[in-house]
Amino acid sequence: MLRRFIFLSILIFTLSCNFISNNDFENIARYDDSYLTKQEFVKLMGDYDIEDSLSKANNIINNWAIDKILIQRAEFNLSEYNLKNIELLVNEYRSNLLSEAYLEALVNSSINLEIDSVEIQSLYTNNKYLFELNEDIFRLIYIELPLDFSDTYQVRTKLKRYRDNERKFLDSISYRFDSYSFDRDNWISKKQLFNKFPFLTNYSYKSLKNYNFFQFKDSLSLYLIKIIESAKIGDESPIEYVLPTLEYMSLNKRKKELMLDVKSKILKDALINNKFEIYKK
Image 1 (cartoon, rainbow, N blue to C red):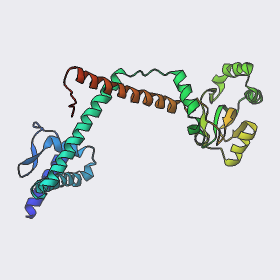
Image 2 (image 1 turned 135 degrees about the horizontal axis):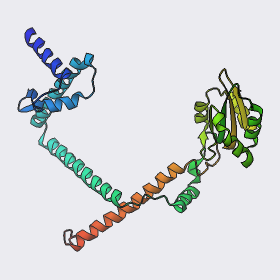
Image 3 (image 1 turned 60 degrees about the vertical axis):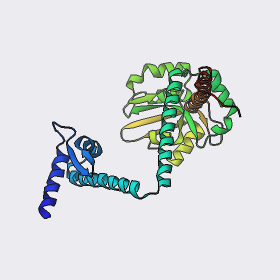
Image 4 (image 1 turned 30 degrees about the vertical axis):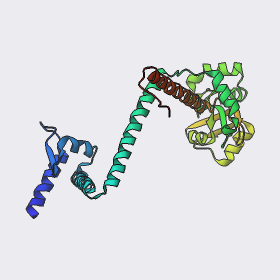
């Protein structure tokens, strides 16, 4: 018995460590008339650590056998009523998967994916109650300067104002900055703000909100942050901030409408071609 166990362990370890074989359908195990092929075994193994390969291979083979045993015994011991119910559920599940997959394919092949700005605006206007902010959000710009930067005062002054002339000037010397962003279109949440600038504290955050400007110096750089626009908790979210959600709502609405249209057309087609008939009582 011990020799048999040692031999089986070596076999499993060899199979789990080296899956190269001239025959992908080589059998690994058998239960009654069912076989676990090497091809199936490799798929079940997936990614694995060499150290755990023996244990994982053994579990896979044992679990495969347990499943086969339970299925066989269930078919033999369960009542005819239970077996018929299971068969009905399996057939119903298969039918639902087939019909839903085909309907999805029909819809995806003909749906218009272009963004309709009028529809987006309508969805936003009619659903503003859904878009109440649960945290502060901002549109901001920032500059990171090296500590030996020679024109710090000038840059700070122009960033605070940031009108067209200031923007053009800062753009022209941006190659001298360690990093920067003058993207005024995208909104950033409070959480994203703290992630982007880890040096922010609750106190400095309040200062930034109150004055729309904050600077911070560490051993490497001077950071200058300028808030262009902000919205606070409880405000209606700006449309730009929830645009991805609105686009999803728009697409989902079109999908539902198209699904109803497709169902109506295939039903009408089946009636016209006498493939579908409703018998009158």
